[in-house]
Image 1 (tube, rainbow, N blue to C red):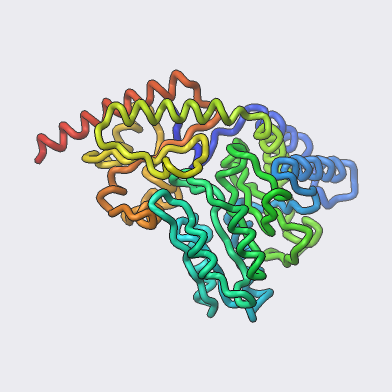
Image 2: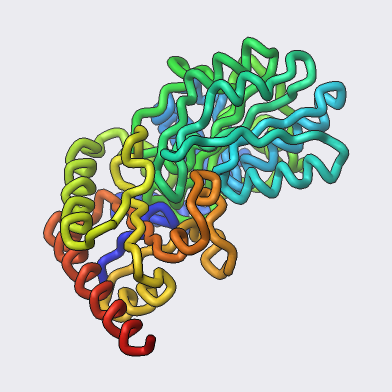
Length: 380
């Protein structure tokens, strides 16, 4: 099986599994306990906190462990609306992940206002539109995706932060897809809140992190035993947290240039073999691992089935909406219609993919697309 769906989830790195295993089998203590087992768990927890902080150039005390990025995002959005009722405005982009889209819908249900900033044809956030949307003294939060999960387009986060702060608004960055793929530095790009997910960076599912800058306030979504220094209650998932810490450590050593070169070679093979093929966001800054490509005349739903049967796993867009019959809201925001979206596939590499398998997959994708087109012609 050739797995090309890393933006949906990544295979756990063997070193990550090795690091977490003792905390599943031997070192099972509760980090809140005072005995030796508890202290061992606490030390492992704090080591992981430092490893995750190092990935984004934060301070360890600015990292809160959560169950995943969805919880991290919900925590920030819920807090912002509760904390500043006199600032009823939330600003997002039109290409956000479902966690932010649904959070914005709930913001409106609770009486707040939401403005959705458009992107251009390349999926790049329109900064002039953001500037016009900001209402000084009325905007509580600007929440934007740093790197898009479908197209890989990287948002101009430094400029977004500058504009938002000038208007007195705080900024949350969904950095789920950035971690381990491009450098993250919260001192150079001073976001106020930032969400991460373990399973998008070769750790297991069920663990994530929230960065909360020391400059800004925060109150927890989950209350109870007061874990995470009172910022996220619930007994800590020590095996998952240890795994995420190790994954963060390994991510800093990954050769991103080599992955970009392989992605580009993969794209060129598809473009050369399919007249009219179009890579989305190609003129914008992109993640080095992501290809969203339209193959005109080919049904992506049929392609996904055939490719799966032939040992290639990919997606049509966001894995969160795989079962949806609606066209991609990301491609729609970029100006593409449903027919275009229905011929689009997303391929996302990880550091565990070899050059040989990726290029062999490109040849198989073209072969499968031609086979499917011929079948459709016969049926027509």
